[in-house]
Amino acid sequence: MGFIVAIAGATGAVGVEMIQVLERRQFPVDELRLLASPRSAGTTLTYNGQEIEVTVLDENSFDGCDLALFSAGSSISKKYLEACRKAGCLMVDNSSAFRMDADTPLVVPEVNPEAAKQHNGVIANPNCTTIIMLTALAPLHREVPIKRVVAATYQAASGAGHAAMVELEEGTRAYLDGKEFTPEVLPYPYAFNLFAHNSPMEENGYCEEEMKMVNETAKIMNDTTIGVHATCVRVPVLRTHAEALNVEFTDELSVERAYELLKNAPGIEVLEDRDANRWPMPLDAAGKDPVYVGRIRKDPSQKNTLDLWVLGDQLLKGAALNAVQCAEAALL
Ligand code: A2P
Image (tube, rainbow, N blue to C red; front, top):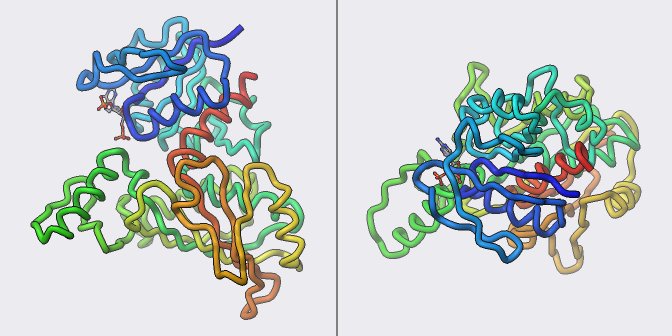
């Protein structure tokens, strides 16, 4: 027997990936409801070879539903949580609306799958950069606890939605054609450029994205002693987030052992050829499920410290795939 599943934000960059992830993982779906704004009503999307009409999200959309995957922004998730609860429908929410609520589990299934069962009607899908980082760090932390992580991120357009991906393509085309181009989604020209993450700046000088990495790491790892320092940057890449991680452990962890742990860890692909100076690149990860890791080195400047280069598809492991895995952990 399968489930009645809804996707709120089905036409968005993450929503369309959710449809494909459900299909690829053969999630038991009896009925799929595709929900979006009135702008998309009447359009169709394909699931398992079947055309499904997109309907307008409203208070009654979840009647009879077992599972709703949300990726339409925080305000929409907040607006419809009660409707989901009333319908007895589990919400897996890709927005930041409920992530830090004490009674909402924040889950990366490779890290804290048991938390998915403790939900109170909603499971929060963590911030994409944090999911990708922790998928790679958890197997190492289990062996030798981590003391501190210094992260520099190289983040794709997809994190800002489908419109930002289009803006990157159109801005690049305009640049090459020598034409004027005024960005409307992101704050600065994106082609052949990079800039600090566009999330709101907090009083401490860090942007919201950077503080999400700090706060969400403590919650997911259930450990407030891990120090996280992040600098988040948007780079002109379509859908893969990359991260340079300098990781200090509480004790020695050899490079060889780190490789071994990562090679055997779920959801991770070690990809590198030192002789050819070949490491994971955004194009390797685009459209793929695993988190890719390479360039594992011992930091000679600091005791018990390794460097890692980590990347993953922001729309998949950073969003749609992780959300479906959360639903699997809770319901299957
Ligand atoms: P629509 O395509 O009809 O605008 P992205 O993150 O790529 O920008 O996608 C956002 C998703 O959220 C889209 O599917 C979008 O639908 C949906 N969405 C945005 N605003 C609303 C709304 N007020 N009601 C329902 N869905 C919405």
